Image 1 (cartoon, rainbow, N blue to C red):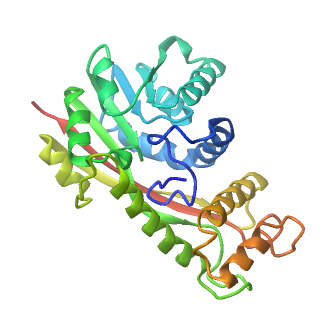
Image 2: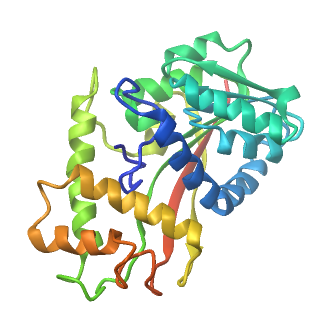
Length: 297
């Protein structure tokens, strides 16, 4: 499990690759990114006004490359390099680029952030980091490392923060109202423990523009982007929601109170009329925040 902050039980690329079944997780990561494509496209359109014609775009913590390919489509004059510590995900990224006709200007780089960025052939005009930074123990040092790989005039774009995703009304007719809010609280505790357990973990106020400024960058904007797939939502969104809730059920099995555990079990049972597979009030609503800064010196 990992956090996006608020991935609702999905594993974010970028840390602890040793015990992850990537053959299973890769499909879920791809489904998530594809569902969130409208949000990403709006974010990249906004970003395109800040960095108009980058030569090299780096996706730092790319996962299976859905966003890497969107970056290649958004910046048709750029070479895109997908960087991740999980080689099976990078293989999927390369295959996606081939399918989309992007392979001639698409590459991959396997290794752990941020050190692997030293192997880039030349500085990046745009470095995109979507929920990979918070898997680094020292986030301030991570941002400084990202900044050091930027060309003069290059932009660092961090996607961190936003709002927890919502799938269901507050009162779903099962157990106590407010199930998702209680799951959020468990995720917050998990996230704090994950951060504390990272090597060289440093507690840091998550003021991303201030951290970017501390690395010598000039903050150029912060904006949040929404994904709104209203009820009744699509079968693909339902499958993603079921997978997300299923991971939360698995990870927090011992911490859930009996009523919430029973409610989740019913929500996950395809044969139950109250499940997310069948009920009419299931939706997907999320907001992600992007912070940008430029290297001026």
